[in-house]
Image 1 (cartoon, rainbow, N blue to C red):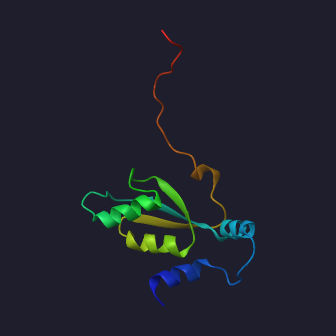
Image 2 (image 1 turned 90 degrees about the vertical axis):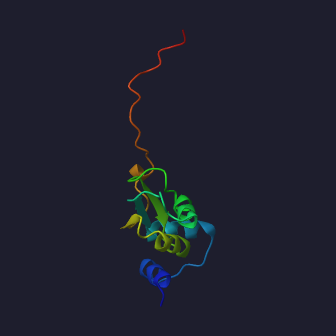
Length: 114
């Protein structure tokens, strides 16, 4: 069994559901997500590796996590860039704070036009 098959087998449940799109979405939320965080710079990496990082939603800022669903495509991408990222298994749906971006305050407010 190769690495991708092991990752998918460990994340997939024993029961399979074959039904409508709505049940697939519910099953994906119950299955969980990977929390993928970039830990190293992309400077000097091959272009194919940089493209894989971009497809995962990474490559702009080190330390900013993204959430990816448990599936074979995501597992393959993670195996391609495993030296550059940190992975955590998040059971259940994505937490609300997962969508928030951290941005520093500007330090000023616009009151009106001059």
